[in-house]
Image 1 (cartoon, helix red, strand yellow):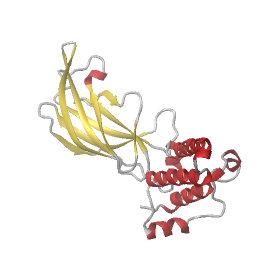
Image 2 (tube, rainbow, N blue to C red):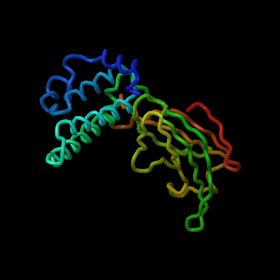
Image 3 (tube, rainbow, N blue to C red):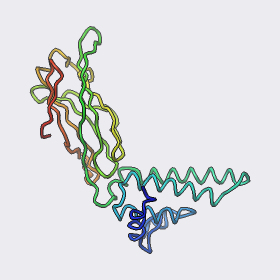
Image 4 (cartoon, rainbow, N blue to C red):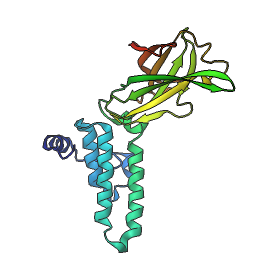
Length: 234
């Protein structure tokens, strides 16, 4: 995408003289530029321009840094230095393709959508359990972390998936998440009620709240007997 003339011109036009790997002030001394200065300058401008989403800016950043490693340390004699350089490139990429990077991406949106929902009955220790799976798509312009919550007919929380770690999706990426009554004590397919709700939540990078900063983005209300679902306001 960056090879597009208009996209490239927009990014180059957004460059500023002080762009660097560490940004400005104190971070400029903590994070060395090394062979990555031009890659970092282009990445800063890519964010600032808004010409590409965060995921594409970050992917191009990694490619540029790896190319810089090959240019700085070419040939078999520099193999060790080249490998070390690419390890550093991966570390720089991981630092920006993160919650921190999502927070810094200008004009970043917190969006997401639920797609097709499927349900099935499973058995654990003779107890029937209901598992509901939904296609989750990151419709935002930055990397976000998502959760799928399952509530019963009375609106009581049953389970959250993933249980221990959020699902990190790049812009445009789709993944299936599944929540089950098996993840909750004393709940089963038999006592979930005639209906249940699946709600898509995302960790809002703009908010740092120790008591929770999840934003509800989309919701499906589903019939337990048939599995038919309809989209409603979250």
